[in-house]
Amino acid sequence: MTFDEIWTLEKSLWLGGREAYAALLHPRCLMAFAEVGILDAETVIDSITGPRWREVTPSDYTIAQASADLIVIGYRAAADRPDAPTYCCVCTSTYLLSEGRWLIIQHQQTVEA
Image (tube, rainbow, N blue to C red; front, side, top):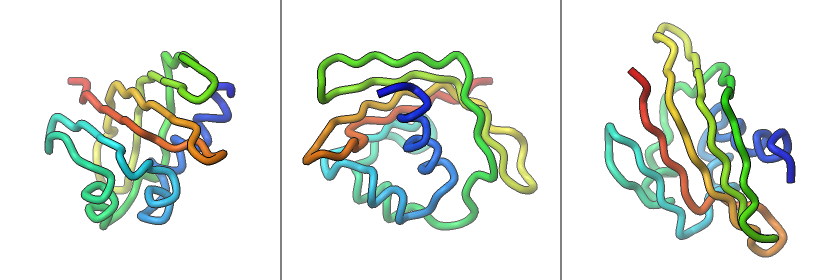
């Protein structure tokens, strides 16, 4: 799996709504955000309301395939939405191959000052 292939999945979460999250989050997924803490998959999916990002651009990205069924990506993101300043953060996501599909089992964001 290349970064471009996994980025297609990752980007769909930035730009998509609840349906994207429901399709890509592993049921045991944990996500960590400095602003709100550690959330499980159900809480994350339930929290998706309001406007999503209009565009997101990755930089300084890397990919590590730990095994045939586990991939970790890291990147910086610059995300834009209408009437808001650009949101810049450092992220990691861990994808697990589960029943033939790549699902996120972990995601973390650290806001850049």
